[in-house]
Length: 244
Image (cartoon, rainbow, N blue to C red; front, side, top):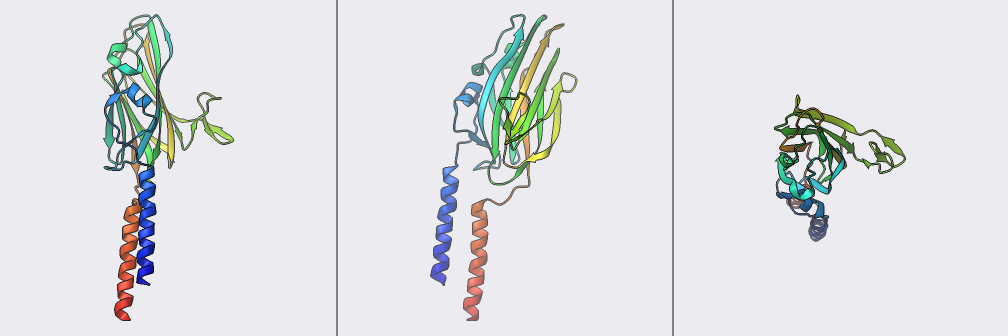
């Protein structure tokens, strides 16, 4: 019986470690948005070693402009990881070089996705910009456990059931905001940040945008569960052995 127990625990340990190794990606590091676009394997953030949120699919684009403003590209936008507890996000800098002047407008999009590794849920999101001036607004849209529908802009896509994303905004008067997600994210999220610089009547701009996700209710990692289970089984075995 003891040999069977030890063999079963050894095989289970090997399967867990193999599963963890097969999904491992590197930690998120400071870089440019272009380097994040080029990183097709994604990166981890939060929860210490091993990570909780795995980010990927970064894109940066100009969706509209008028009045010939200076147009930014992904190589000019800096990305700094901003871990918060088990979750977190990023600060996107470099926007000071894209100030729009009177008679100009520009709208940018920063999009990305994440999935939750190891079982917690994402219960909220925060955005903030520093320091804004003029007329700037940023709207974040989140598809919880879904993706944006490419055939229906502004909608999330669950197979056979499109629905509106959860959205919240900031502007010069209210440069930071929080959203309690309902429903929460249990597996993955698709995120769109729309940045509108309106210089119709005055120069407008900001330096950086910070976007983070709140992660709560962690569950023990598989290896922790395995260790606990192994300890309980060993205690039970020793008790039966002594009693025998």
